[in-house]
Length: 187
Image 1 (tube, one colour):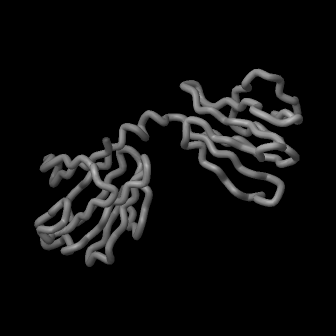
Image 2 (cartoon, helix red, strand yellow):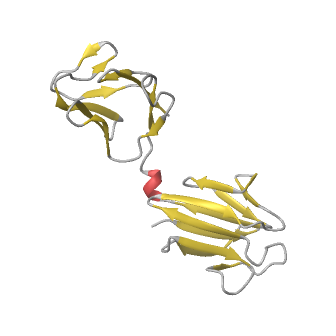
Image 3 (tube, rainbow, N blue to C red):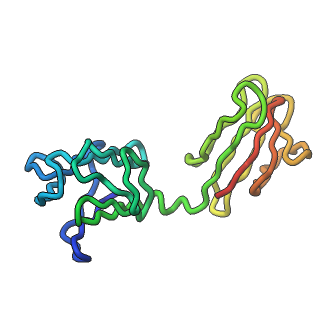
């Protein structure tokens, strides 16, 4: 369960588990997280959860909201990010994201959606078109692998047609599926 650890001058004041989709922060008593300090606006910011991802949004506060030292209007949060509101430091802890150490993206290089990037955040991502050619990219403990699921033409990885076994993907690998060229990028 994601949580926020609120501290002032290096002293932890409280930990708040993020059990709701929307958690408000501010000086007014009706906020979910109340920070009673004049540097904090009455309705300062809101944290919204969408699946595993958390986003912080500044609600036009007087003194602003900062993430890792940079002022933000709306920002996706990552495990261990530090939100600053006035003199308060709020550490965002999301261990579900911490488990996703290896991150990958598919960049579409050709076809009607050329230029689109698809973050590989799910355990299994499906590529292709049913009835034509379908492949899956699966997140493993070591990284990512691609497998041919259906269709007459198997995916081609770095110029070599795939067989029936899954193929491990490395940074920069080129994939061709049903005439569309893509590139795997590992972060």
